[in-house]
Amino acid sequence: MTINNITFKISDNDCRIYAICDGKSVGSIFFIKIGTDKIMISESEIDPSYKDSDIELNMLQQIIQMAREQHRKVMTICPYISNIFKNHPEFDDVRLLNNGR
Image (tube, rainbow, N blue to C red):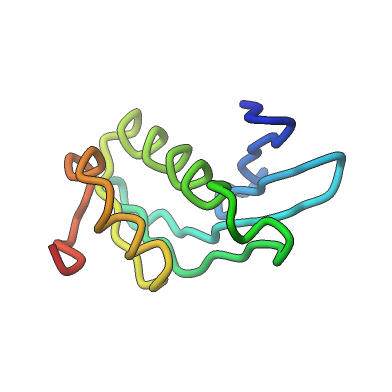
């Protein structure tokens, strides 16, 4: 998927999604599949020059789509991603924990 010349790619070992711009990684989210029904997001990174963009939201949307397709619930221990969850009720169908809502 490409959004404004940003490409999102899930790593071959299915544990990190990358945002790539002009061949360079500008952000990533690390996640772990737990059993057959959960995904835990543990950390996110973003290049400081992209911090005011929606790259992390777009990477999270990719993980949410994967969770829906695989019938998994998502939980996060990453404070920034938890905050995104709080502000997007459209993700409630895959939210495992309430995350402060």
